Image 1 (cartoon, rainbow over the protein chains, first blue to last red):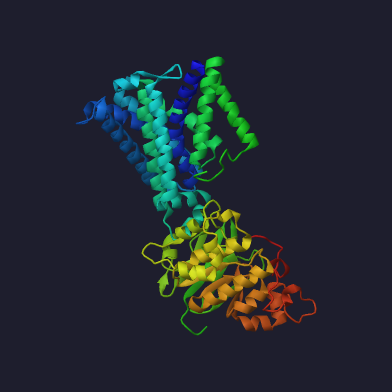
Image 2 (tube, chains in turn green, red):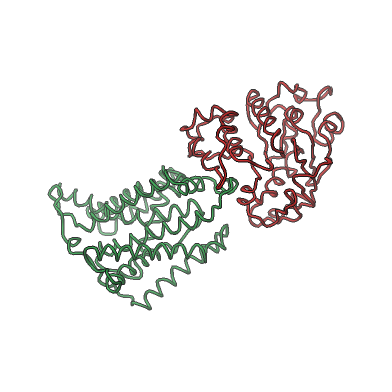
Length: 296
Length: 269
């Protein structure tokens, strides 16, 4: 029983990480029709900015309020980079899909190379509060606090995103834009502002994933964003492009499947099962679990 | 059309994916009443409305000039044109199916303006009753009311309305025509419409497109009075004609759109 509980909660921790990356990716694709391969870079920016801030930013540090400040700095850095990418690189390329893919892939590769050139290719130990390295007993299982932290953060981000989408003017614009962007424009709304906003939100959520992923894995490396991005894309496709709630469901399915199969099967079989799940969903329900609607 | 026009379209050409859809279209819209844009399917009526609004697909080539009053609209983004008073009711309604009726209306509120909910709910009381209902679950007629209501929430200088009666039941066609008739008292309308009974009821002026060009323009009465002219331009007979289809229906009993089409051979438009 304790093994099941442990696998479930660590699987949910992994799901939380996927959700944080996938939610922004999904909104960006749903609203702006942009396949953003540079989204993993936002995660890396968040992780490295948090790591840097913990050691260099006045008031920030590896524990207590200092750690919260470091994470806030990392999240802000992710949001700023997300916004800058949209304004400088994506905006001139809307409706030019191939160019977008080339630019975002290039940016992703250049970003990783830049991080490697600056801080080296080897993983660096991530500053972590002591309590995140301890475990909490849950129904007989010893669950890592870092996993619980990820789950709580993802639940808070999900609630905040849904609240934003349901109860704010910009949220309304984004939900409508996911359905029919042209008609939003035809109602007198400058939808480009919403594009910038979703890139900023996506950048911030991915950066939070980078910071908390650093706590979870205990280290940060330049290629971390790229490897998590693959699963985030799978989550977005399974959940439904543009759907935050769909991403949450899909992230839970992928995280749990991976964790259980890797434990009870052979190591790596979980990844194959995730790809198989993707194929099944694409065959049976190509629009994904939730279809194309931001809050369903 | 002796008054200063509210809209002047001059030598408008649109090329999309290699197809020369509009080839030098020129016409004006009077500052009051309804100007109807007619023509067989595929002649470029919808393309004309979309080009006026700057909604031509990326890669499409647009030439010519469009003026709203004295102001040239060249290069203006769509959202700014709409904010400046060009209201648009698209073909097929385009309501946001996943949003509620209230949310659809809220989305149409323009910054700095006072939304005229009283006006909308007076014309369409049903929208108030169904405020919490998702727009996707409304009937076709109710969706059309919402699409028109969304535009009437704001003051406009000109309304562009694209086939508002398409696919609607006869009773709803009558209701929509009544609403447009009332609306046209306050704001000029450029209307694309296939239902000749509705055209007869609403239109003051008419512009007929054929093969991407203006084939005829003038008073709507004049066009509809000349059965042979109507037949040659629109491919359909009108009241009193021996071979006329259901377009002979009287004004007070508008026929369903599907029974009085101008032409349904080609679907693009």
